[in-house]
Image (cartoon, rainbow, N blue to C red; front, side, top):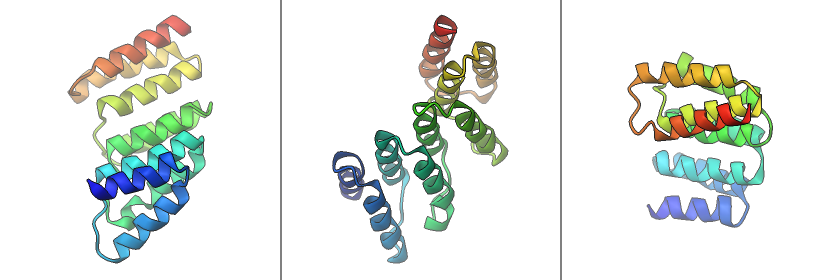
Length: 154
């Protein structure tokens, strides 16, 4: 938890996500295992900065850093994309996640639904909500809330 706190402080609070990534990369070379909390801290920094391209690059680097690409990390990167009006990129990431057989999580599905909202695609948003029932997502409240916003805005 201490490492996650340090990475989060660097990435989000001090607005230095690149430095935080370099620290994480160096730690992996010292055989320190990067976990989900570390990844989320780093991606949150990029998302806060509006740097969706850097967030995608980090996601692509995760396997090299001995960490699997998790649904939670995908969700954070998708959020970075749709918040910068890159809704189609966010939906492409969701498709990529499923193609890599990464099981969707409530927040990654909600991020995909939010991307649909940004793109004015309410039908697609509802389709994702219906599709999500087959994935047996825990705590689907995020998905329902995102779908309601999509219907309201579109």
